[in-house]
Image (tube, rainbow, N blue to C red; front, side, top):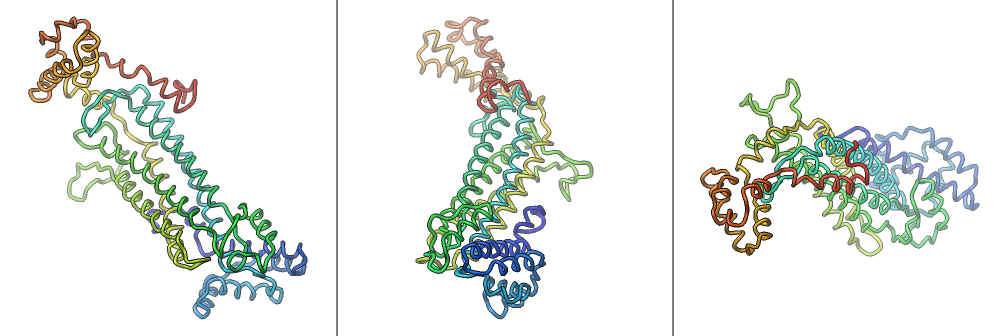
Length: 440
């Protein structure tokens, strides 16, 4: 997590100040429940809130204590006792450190997810707006990076919209997966703390009680969460790579916005590079990289060990902060993307009608020619376009074998671009909802 790829709201979730405030709330809510059950005095629970709730926890002081205790939760509790006074003896009754650490981590992940969901909404809005703007902007579709058949740029963006809609659903499922709380004590048996304490804290912190924990919340939940972030990052990269290819000089069908005063190269003043989408490709690699250690965290020893701890101290902030930045950056790219329909049409016509080869193939088969013979007829004319720069329509019209079964009018009709876009509205209705094909 470095400032260059960070945004303040997400960074704040992972600050020591936020972490210690969440730790305090977990402990204080547990004291409330203990007081209701008569385990500790209600006056003590109130004092803990009155003094701790108003406190500004001294991170330097906690670090100073931890340097001696070598235990972060004990260091925090010691500092909290300095603030609360004698009633601090009732804090952490029957709890273990993981109750605080794991519940806090999940609170932070839930808060981070809510920011990511808001990011996703902004990206979806931008994709939808630009998709409708270019619904009928005809461009060439490519397979293996080679011209295939016509499509529209709006369909490319609608595809991305549908993909990120799926990402949003996965993220919502990941939020539910991670929103659990464990206040179950050593090895998770509730031997020294009533299960009702856990239920109370879970509700107060916006979580649900973990059905069964050991001394930790099961890490398969976290593996699923970080894997989901990795999938979202892969979708960010897919769209970024598409834009990077479209911005190549010899293609130039779309381009990142190039702002006044921006420079593309220290050596070559003419350069306009796809630096934002290249950056997004790199950031996506990092977010995906965090999924593997999260999966390796699942296999802890017996009821717990702390091999997962150092991993999560890094991947929690780094994965969420990086993906937050990436989603915001991608939204900006889409929002300001420069689109060049004239270049799209020029590229489409670069091989002079070749993109209509399948229509000719189908027309020949429907006219009674075997598929094998029809393929050979079309391909031999197509190869002259590839190799000699011929015009595909002219070659077909001059081919006596083709003309034996298809008239000039029938062949010419096969070169109508609108044939390829006749179902755009149907696809838009599928993606954006029935009746929305003409609306932004």
